[in-house]
Length: 309
Image (tube, rainbow, N blue to C red):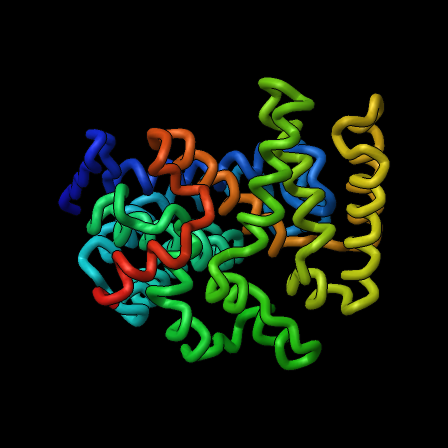
């Protein structure tokens, strides 16, 4: 695979290899987060009996070159069908290394689009690109995402049919609003509470996402009742102070055990946590004024970039 390196006006470069490494790192950090209600972590397998942390780590590493390839595709101006082809190859590689277990199908979709958006933004120069990867995904590929084929194997497709839930497709087409409006603010606020403890910040962001996301994995496993229970449990944790509570760890661990007992697994929120961590990592690498985590000035962005679409 050839290496693309694009520098902005400040000399900061984005490369396909860096994007691949940051995306894979975001997936590993998601696994390293604990307590994370019902989800696989380095401490336990949550509500799952067919997967563990080592499987997730292996899957993340397998996917690294595909995220790099999606960055390259975005830089070359590829259309959604080209991105889907890379995504299908990534999924096949994932299933091969996991023995057929779906560890990261949702993350391939979400992080893959964000990786492609990073490539597209680097192509026009970070100084003139929209300051949100999500905004680029929405304007560049939003319509194609919604009009594309539905996967018969997807939990999101089943949730759409049964409950009318939009799932990952609607989230991506809208520019990942839960990442920018829920995940990132929770991550930043928790850093003020937990200081340098990155796990504390990730736990807060995870609970914030579970409280708000219409998680299609929860709908698939336990219907609307399970979704409501999960959201209420996460909301109660946050309303009682979240990670700012003196005994936040025991409260979060108790909720985790409750999710396991009910076999609840908010996998959609886990994917959005990984996306949040990916965007946050890119934001921290960019100079002021070109930070990729910020919402764009929509009118200025439309004037400078829309004619190329």
